[in-house]
Image (cartoon, rainbow over all chains, first blue to last red):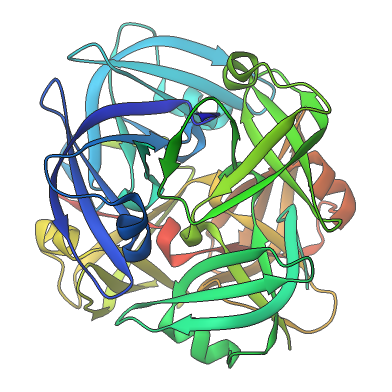
Length: 142
Length: 142
Length: 142
């Protein structure tokens, strides 16, 4: 299966924290980056996920927020991947921003033009890709 | 109330699985398709939802991922609706894809142009609309 | 930290309802509006959030649904902010809609052009911005 989710990261399951309805699953990518996903308990069972298993994290570009450092602020979003902006593609309403991460991965984000202008994003500048654990879909080779 | 959520599916509640904060609600559409929603427990109470009740599932097009079959892969996303692509509308950054489902329903997805090209989507070809249970909003006639 | 999330609302934490994996956090804005967020329990601990603390709610414009009143319908979405449309910016695929709220806040939504046309949105008309508690990211000054 090939999906339209712009962001997919291969890793290994390092932790599964069970809940009544939702489980929290942590994935470690090859570069050491950790991604946290919230998926239903039934999905974890359906995928047969256990610790040390290979898995893929999928995140839609429209679920990714771009942040630039501007003084201290802490966010509840579990996934905050720092990198460098490698591409900016403006549209009529939305702008696509690609952030290269250490370890060879990159993250695409779709943000509004107004936000892109407000943040004064430029190629080569530092930025952080932020997404909630609930925005992550997990996949395993079936 | 009329909403901008492009996708709305009328069905009947077939199961409610309670959690501490979130409940999992399953809806069966007329064609037999099942949709799973994660909503807060308080919302289930506010809507007065019980099994066998009529309800509507709303999903924003920007929350829908499009997948094409390309070998075995299992996804954690609880909602995976297979169908046929009936419409592709490209924009500057995003493309709108409409997938017709069996039973007369259709699902709209907004994906990036880069993804649309990578998946080589064409009208008439098979595709699956994928969205997380947490992307579904439930509605009832008040 | 400055983020691309178009919508940010400063408020005070009025309630934290703990779950096994996710907590539900309620924020009251200065105008009295309440916003509900679902974030992981670990995030609440990481942010050190307690009742009466100052916090900011961030919501991406692409997670906001626009609704117009058209007879009774109840939605599961916990956040439903009524206001007046102040701006409509159409693109090739998506339209940006800004809704001014009582108390000086405003909410931006990105919806498909098809939805904008179907809802017949016009500047100055009443509309409601709707988003799920799971779409909200919380922030605190670090």
